[in-house]
Image 1 (cartoon, one colour):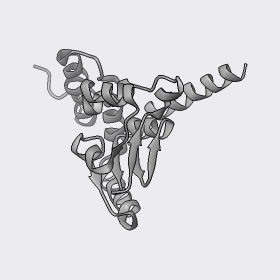
Image 2 (cartoon, rainbow, N blue to C red):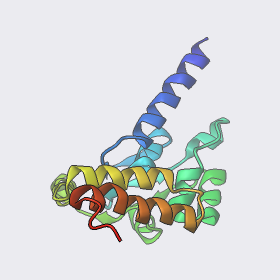
Image 3 (cartoon, one colour):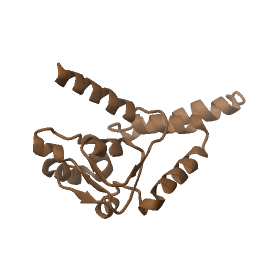
Image 4 (tube, rainbow, N blue to C red):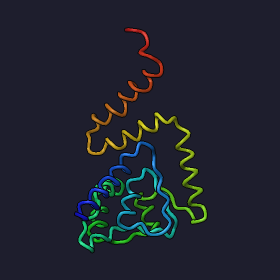
Length: 169
């Protein structure tokens, strides 16, 4: 019963983070192992200190790690390596692999994350939420399917919605 409760709670947590309607920024100062690594991967933008370390050590304890978000960010080959070995990577390697977008000293990390959040918040909320929706739903679709959502639906929801359908042709 406890295992089911933990699984269900973990499922709700991961899906709530993944489906969160607004952009999320991770600021990692220290170890991001297992679930902390998952949280980082599920965020839209990642910042870290030089001391940050990332790993999926749960493989060594018999728990398969969350692979898919990692492969979307760093590619399947690197994700396979990290998931199968539990190997730790430091902030410099994480940055080189595009796992983190920026490295900042510990005394500047929170300020950098807040500055990023403020830059994101300059866009209208509706545009941010639509973009986040596209980011969440675009994985695994063809270009044509993504284009229909990211291009055609943008015109339908935002431009036509804001300016009306225009003159009939």
